[in-house]
Length: 167
Length: 405
Image (cartoon, rainbow over all chains, first blue to last red):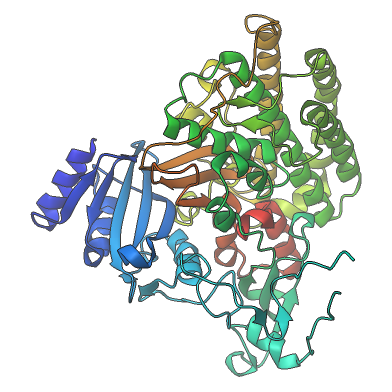
């Protein structure tokens, strides 16, 4: 199936205009959808016999920085029996980034979403266990944001090693 | 002048920084929380399992990760793409060549030179990657035996792994973190005489693999400890994003070397072994280890074919330069790309975003195989004995450098 076919299938089932655009510049080609549609689209693509995306390969969060003021969540899907791949892109507001979880569809999204929450501060609605996964629970700030600045100390410990004076 | 670290130990700090999910108040009368620390040697000091037990039975497992913090993704956003390769090595430090291959392949595709790489370069890449796959599987098999209590196979495979590491050191100058596969080519051609030495090693290794079968895979104690333990049904594995030998152990013939056919793999003849439940049920710990042992044998086949090519049609010539295509300036056009490869532990994926203006990626997400493989642990270990939990953890063969990038 081509990306046009995926777009057609999504639009047919979820209403015209669900797919906002097709990103030809991406490999594999991507469909851009509104974040509110993510669960419906994923459910459709996972269960439909024509698409059958049973493997969520990768979930990526991207911070576009304070100037653009958006964040993105990108899903890479792969269908093992049908051997086709698709990228789904969603754009979020940077001020309060939030999107529905897909961890009830693919369990692997559970940890990927926790990682995105941990490093970018994107909140995943109705996630079963949205705790920090890599950083300490009381760490302040989200390290992968573009405007993140490392705190000088963490509980009295210096986070940056000062160069020793050679003299 | 270095200053003393101003840090005061307070017990509540530990409670806050790594909170237990379970506590006295949530447990029933006969249950208790046990912390099972680093067990598998490739998880030294970086994985804590919060295990709720009822006597000897495991009721719940909560993995706590995140202590290494080598910050791969942050580095990849601040260093030029060819400078990222040493960091790629450090993710899966027992299978670094494979990770380099995946990363280089991704950047080459973005630059549009993926199809132009000389055949000799590709054969050398596959050769060193498969050597490294054997070394990685040897760590998995050997230390797994160690987890179960078999010491001899560990010493044997570590001895044979050392030969591989010496070969790779001869090639690249480094024992484990190679920086050998460059974007567009290789750091250097194979040293003179490498092909002969490698053939010698392969001939030495073949009878050793028969020995390994006899001493470990067909050992009654090993079978008793691993068969019918930690079964992963195929659907559950896919749902958790588990790939590699674990998924193949569950009976699904998914190998990206065959499915995607990247590099020169389509030209090579090798099988993809899958678990069949020969000793117990399909997808148990024994099956997973068996798949790894079989994959070592398949890698030996691949290496032999590469050596034939490297000594025959694509042999070393005076005017061959493996750095010919290495770009002076890496500036891919603005795009998104997801690339994946079959690593010793499963699917290693890289998501790139470039803006077309600089040689630094805007975003480079690494989809580590071990990260997804570890996430299935709570789902498959409930109801087993604590000793079986150790067997299950070992059979998943994760490297923490990849779990916590």
